[in-house]
Image 1 (spheres, rainbow, N blue to C red):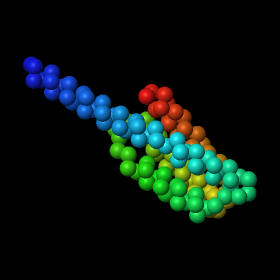
Image 2 (tube, rainbow, N blue to C red; image 1 turned 60 degrees about the vertical axis):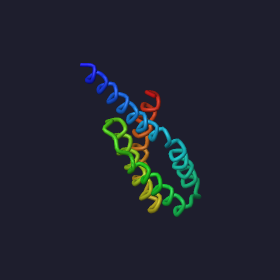
Image 3 (tube, rainbow, N blue to C red; image 1 turned 90 degrees about the vertical axis):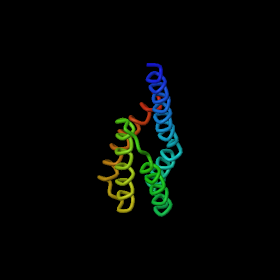
Length: 121
């Protein structure tokens, strides 16, 4: 019985550490989200550097792809953020206002989930 309790404690500590690491990774996207926002403002005001934006979106998506989580909120955030990033990239490349609007909806959903995750920690 004592061994079982010790094993359960070790597993629970390990799982807590895994969950904390996943949440910590998600919390590190503030700069990436701010970069996307700044680029969006630049494109909306007639400026914007598509090549730089494209590189930053690829880096952001790469960070998202590295996260492996069983947490439904984390996975929902990743899915919505990837969709927003990909649509926004297409939208700015073609200056397609319908896609810009659609990407904004995905971005709003991603941010809602993101802040819920941050608030839970």
